[in-house]
Image (tube, rainbow, N blue to C red; front, side):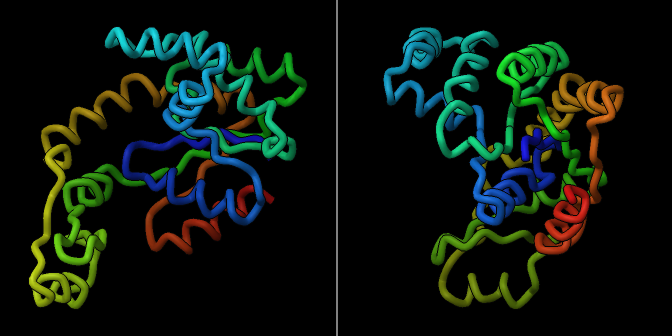
Length: 213
């Protein structure tokens, strides 16, 4: 199973990828994790990425693609992989398609986790961490009992600085502008699978598994 996960920030890509990874015994190939690992291992592309990042720039596409090539060539990716965080643009999707075809490992599908904009905003702006227990909560979706348990334990519900509405709206605007065209890209290739990403994590996962059958 070789898939790309698509979806806006807060749609649950990382959560669903981890469940799928555990069930199917295939790796989640996250761009950020790959870059850090390649740099730590001192691979050819990792060294190139380190030089660019140390200069304060983003790793260029050709370096990221080189790192993807290295990563999916490892033994644990023999039966497939879940790409998370790449591609982000249509050009990256074209480059990835060329690379995977060259390796004889074309994508099976791109899975879009589809979710209403207002729910996304609540998921992201409502996130809180209990300062006492470290538990992740949401002022909109967690039960009152869970929220009260934090304060009754002497903790506070802490919001990350970048979880404010202005920052989140900007992140979603960037997603719509740069990444949404990927939906049309994969649809035009008959490789788009869309699932409803609203609701409890396990219910969304059941939909994902059913769609991948």
